Length: 129
Image (cartoon, rainbow, N blue to C red; front, side, top):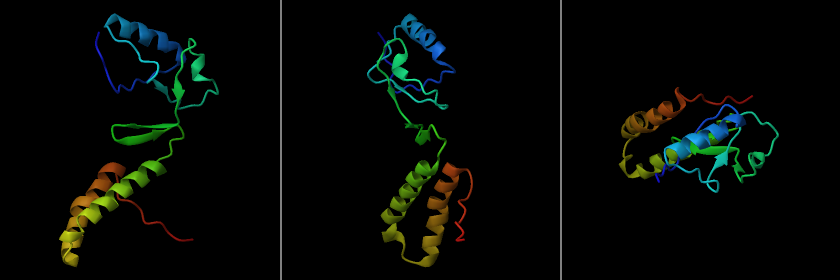
């Protein structure tokens, strides 16, 4: 029997679940119902445990490839996580911040580039209204 840990599988509908289970069995894999979680992108209002009387946990968000995905397409949690990581990076480098010029160079090279890579653009400054 083979094992495949931490797999993310996207299904269009609940009806494709039996097809997935059958395909897994053909190649010697078994889906662990205790570890399996379901996240609906569009809430059907149905209990995931109605699927063939199996016990699946329904989640509203999970981490995938380093990013936190949510059912509400809310990126505020992910942005907060990335800002926190950036702040930790700044704090860990404080001993190197001997001059303003060094601080700016390190900020642009490390912190800002990480934020741009994660967000896909420069973060906007929030305006007070």
